[in-house]
Amino acid sequence: MGVVLSNIIAIYRRELQGYFVSPLAYAIAGVFWFLAGLFFILILMGPDGILAAVTALDLQGQQFGVPVPPIDVPYEFVRAFLDRMGWLLLFVLPILSMGLYAEERKRGTLELLATSPVTNWAVAVGKLLGVLTFFITMVLPMLALEAIALSASTPPMSPAIPLLGHLALILLAAAILSLGMFISSLTDSTILAAVLTFAVILLLLFVDLIAKNISGPIGQALGYLSLLKHYNNLIQGIFDTSSIILFGSYIILGIFLTAQSIDALRFQRQ
Amino acid sequence: MHNLPKPMIEVDHLSKIYGSTQAITDVTFSVEAGEILGFLGPNGAGKTTTMRILAGYLPATSGTARIAGFDVHEQSLQVRQKIGYLPETPPLYPEMTVEGFLYFVARIKGVPAGDRTTKVKAAIERCNLQDKRHVIIRKLSKGYRQRVGIAQAIVHDPPAIILDEPTVGLDPRQIIEVRNLIKSLAGTHTIILSTHILPEVSMTCSRVTIINRGKVVATNTPEQLLTQLTGGSGYELEIEGEANLAKQVLLNLPGVSQVESIPLAGIHGYSPKDNRAYLRVISQPGVEPGKHIAAALLHSGFDLYEMRRVSATLEDVFLQLTTEEKNMQTEADSTTNEEEAA
Picture 1 (cartoon, rainbow over the protein chains, first blue to last red):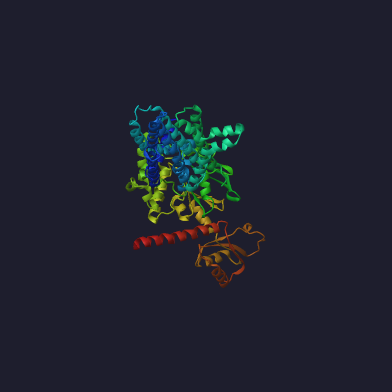
Picture 2: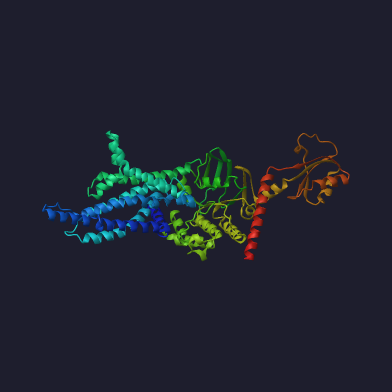
């Protein structure tokens, strides 16, 4: 067990190190920070932002003398922001995951990993943890922005909802990265891996819509598979163990399929 | 040093089919512990396929291979602990430093934390990489990358080392260094190295297996193999006259290296006639002294009844190998000239 852990850590560190010296990773992080920052400002202070909407509503109430239902601004803000972040993941994550195995294949280093006394799943776990750590590093500056905004709210917001929301963000990212890793293990073309991952995520996000058009138990079952539905539940503060289990299942499925696909390499005829 | 079972590497009737092409057919050989086996063959002969099967990277279609007593496919994880493997293209992470990369390899190869520093240092010294230890691999020349590739194969001090074309892309001086390095590993390690360069095996290997079109055509020591190979080209003669006298005449001819009598049973379909001699003339490689032989014999008063060229089974392999080596030599020469010019 100690050996396996040591292997996972070795793979993890190498993977993470690779991101921090990769120009592509910096470019992705830059674009991500720009777009996420833009969303942040627009949601909070933009012309259609929450502050503007609340002010307009208050003004309406005063003019007509009708009592306005109170709006929980910090809550609405966190929910809206995490919702946009979820969409941003759709574009960012395939680029992060595309090289996980495709690059190793192209460089021939998969031959080193596959002939070392490391199990395939240990490699997959190490890699997934590496890319996930990089993603969390990308999200950290956003947390600082949110902390500044939310600290201005009176009464202070309970930390439970943003915490759950960000956990959901990381789980969603881990699930998508895990599947992206599997797709990356199937090809030595990074571009192909990115495009396929994008398509699969899109499908998993919208499986909800498809499910609604199918009646009966099949539709219901498909509905449960929707990543978006569970993500939306979690960021609204609805804690449901089935959501956590669903994300966990996607993550484990991705790791399992990756290990199998690398193992299949050892059995392939061409 | 290592408690080695014998033989270290056993390859038994190995075959590999890719789709409809047969890459290797019924390959059988073995490598004793501490030995260096050269796996010699022209490009596309199936060397890399065999190496990959031995390293556990590819499965064989049929047959078995065992390293240190473990089946490379069934007991892959145990085998992987026992081998160091340099694939055709060195598996390197371009963004890592030489030292960082070797630490990583040592770690995934299961070198205990306490030994890593000494092992990495030893590998760096053995491969003469001291000056480059903190250099990022992307910035290394091809020769240095190849050396880092060898370093990753030996960093964990494995009992069996598989090297696929270890001297490809190196300049002549580096080739000599690498050959010396490989020789220094023998004894404590069992090494199998593939190459398409004939002199390479005679310089480094204790035994050679020649493979051509996926089949093993010969296994022997380099010296015996060379005589076997060169001995193959020549002529068989049937003459009337005194055999010893004819030998004298023939040996004086340019291009003739050896003349021997053939036992009569060796020639099929001939009933031995009185006063006939059967001789085999072995010529130096690349020379065709046929017309001189005929002329000299007739001139000296022998009657020539038959003369035919002998083509040995290994001859075409040998020719292919020697011509490739010649190309390599001219290439190497031209690069040295370029370097001198620059």
